[in-house]
Length: 293
Image (cartoon, rainbow, N blue to C red; front, top):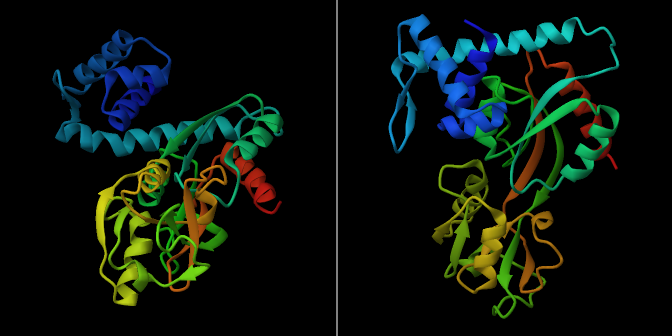
């Protein structure tokens, strides 16, 4: 059994695609498939069920995945521990980002990080806060930028708050309320909404606020990307509640209005609290500096 084989298994499990996993590992699909098949023969168990339409883990694969991730994380920490030049970093840092992050300008953070550590590769993963925190806990991410409602802190990871903000109502330019300076949730009770999928942390921020206000709303559209939300609002199909930093000034076809009793969001940076890798610690240093600018 080789570490490279473990990496291939972890990537296939993450992408549920041999093709995508091969791309992320910079090998041909045939080479990756050959190595996983060799590992399965060594173990005497199939790790994946392959079909023309899908790839999924077998029961043996589900059992194999957590220790495989742990072994890879341990190997990365071992390399960190014996680097000859303490100030020289190599390897890969894996960063998770929510689509609506606004506490820091991610491209500026990455530019500053790469300027200081040009030999480190950067992998970005977009997702919702709950999924990204889970990926840190299982070793798939080093650092993540999260957004949660007040009182709902990240679980099982190291974290610190970097910003908090209030949502605003995002309305079509011609909407009857678009000229207001502020409004209450009750004013939006009869509107059709677009929001993040039910059960996600992004959705919970608004759901909790509407519940506390005793206001029912109709969420007719569920999407994961804030940009798509803005497109739907611009077309007059729905209204939305988003943090101000998510709405670019160039989106002149929509208007934002403060919401007196609207939801709040706290942004966090999170990391592996047990044994963060050197590349993660270096990234956290840059994030702290950029968040204070």
